[in-house]
Length: 390
Image (cartoon, rainbow, N blue to C red; front, side, top):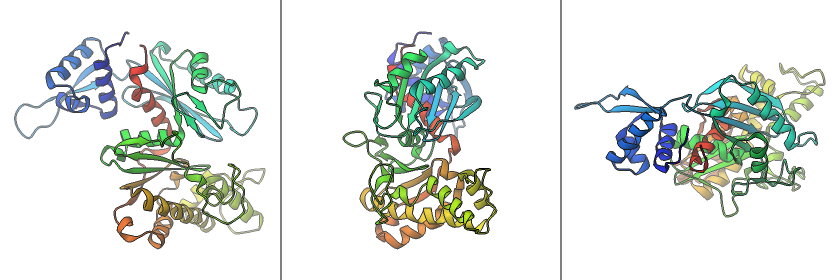
């Protein structure tokens, strides 16, 4: 398959991010005239990349034809790395995961977590696929840390080769590779498939082992001057003398993170507090167990999440006063706790925000689920589709 027509690529991008749409919608999204949009759609149908999906509903007159991408024409390999767990999945052109998403432990703070070991996992996943792997167009990777998107460098993790992480993955897998920060990837997923479809001023909170932030301003990902905007975890809010992993003291992360919740649960259980949370054989509590028991009504589990939520709300109050967002979306692994976050966060906002600003902002849960980062990693490939040689 040879795709070197930039107009064709623009149409593919429009259909991937918007699903089944008519020619007029393609025209509006791409900026092409309707005749030009129709011409490109027809050519893509002839190439076997686009199909007609029936007729749209209409209040009167002729019903427009809907167009969509052929789901299995090509695929995207999506890789989502967090501090301790990595996920790999295969995504088709209908933004669907094909087969199982693979999870494996990959502790970025461990010396054994090398770039080569990550590549072995990626290549191992590819070898197990039952599809024609020549149909994989590219790899999308999202990782924590300060990510230089232009150079493909992570300034915090996976630096052991001394080379561009993005380029090294591409060289050792044989596929074009695109890379971004994990929170920015989640924000991209929200922008293209979540609440960002209808709202343009959004702060996307990545509640994870730290507290990341993806920023959408005027309908685009905001990165700041150096490209590192959104280090929400490291706002120095507390005089607690706790040293953060960044080396500073009193960061938000020291009072509100999934790691802290696990540590607090361990300490409470060790001190004999009554709870249905069950630690593992080594006496360690997992965040999954805390979230599950909180949903089941366990008092300790609810308290731990509520305390962290209140501190997150304090930090969000600062963000609201500076950015005046329309919507704050709670995403990331921690968002699996669902509505348990909303009341304590809202309590802090009610106490600390100027009402005229708070009244214009809402806090909502992401609708993208636990694979939001994977969805964003795949979207990163399509967002840069013009850079791919098919």
